Each structure stands twice: as structure tokens, then as C-alpha cells.
Length: 235
Image 1 (cartoon, rainbow, N blue to C red):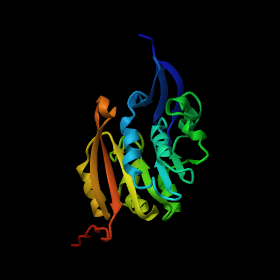
Image 2: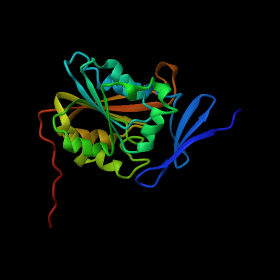
Image 3: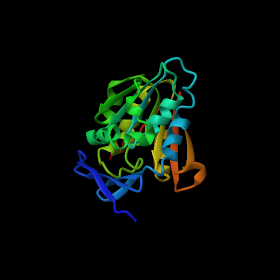
Image 4: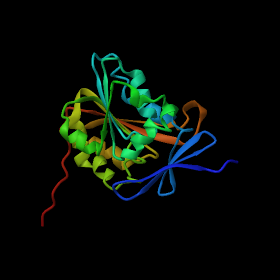
């Protein structure tokens, strides 16, 4: 078996080490030595797009936000569903991940960053959400390994009440948020509901019909009910 080849290494804002490795045509990104994603298992990332964007295919000029570029598979699947008049904003926290996708990783997903409909923002997706109100028909989040932050502590805010409020404010009427997770998370499901979302939970295989680990996709649509506020206890 061929040895792993190191193609790139960088640091996250939380001082985690990200490495891009290649062996036998398989690309892997590691976070502090732990596998974060592989080019051989991306079916659930594509399902994130198909489930989260099913309602935008007939829209005249839809806008989608993709939080987390990864290896580009979610972005590519989103573009495949979008009309030529659509736009996709990709927010990626780590600049070198964008560089890898423009370089050695690009061909794996069909070089989606070259599509003229794509706008790349290097920065925190929560900052994008805070500054673009009622801007998106769909918000697709594949940030970290899910709501329980794995590589970046700052990602916790995105999935907390603060982040969910920003997501709700950034969605257009009829819009939807879709969140990828490596595991089930009942607490996050309840938090979505408490913040005024109707929730559907889908479980998909990493390789879809070819099997692989089971991943979870949370789908949320803002409802008309006001978010439930936590009670303040006084003594």
C-alpha cells in the first residue's frame, strides 16, 4: 500500500491543525490528526444540498448560503440544482481550504469554485448571517462535525440560540435551513423547535445507496410561532 502524501497543512483560528493528505486517489482532511472528511465518502454532503434546496429549483433567482466549503461536494450538488440566475455564497473560515479547492482538490467535485454563480467569503459564516437579512432561500451548514463542535469552539455559537436567530433572520419567506451532522442530536433538534422552526430529521448513508456510516441532516423551516424564550429564575 502506498504511503500517505502530505499536500497541505494549515492552522484554524482556534489553533487546530488541518492537514490535506492523498493516497491512492483518496483525499483526506485531518483535524489535529483525526479524520474530518474523505473524498470517497461524500454522498451525505450531496444529500444536504438535495434536501435543503429541493424547494429552490423552480425559483426565478434563488440565493443559497453554503456554510463550510469542505471538499466542495455540497457546493457542486447545490449548483447542479440551481438555475443560471441563481447565486451561491460560500463561507469558509480557513483560507487554505479554499486554496486546496482551487488546487489539488478541485477536480474531485468538478471545480465548482470556477462557476460564475459562486461568491466566496473567507470568514465566519455567522458573520455572513448577521449582515445579510432575508437574503437566502436556503442555508446549508456543514460546519464542523455537526452541532457538537469538533474542530472549532467558535462554531458552537452558530448552533446555539444566537446562531439560530441569525439563521431565521437571514432566510427569505418559505426558506429552509439544512444542517449536516455526523451523529444524531436530540438536544439540537429540540433547540431548533424552541427557536421557531418546524423540524424534519433525515438519516442518510455517507455513500448513499452504496452504504457507509449513517449521517444526520436536520431540516428546519421557520414557522409563525414566536421562539420560546428561556425563563429567568429569580430568588
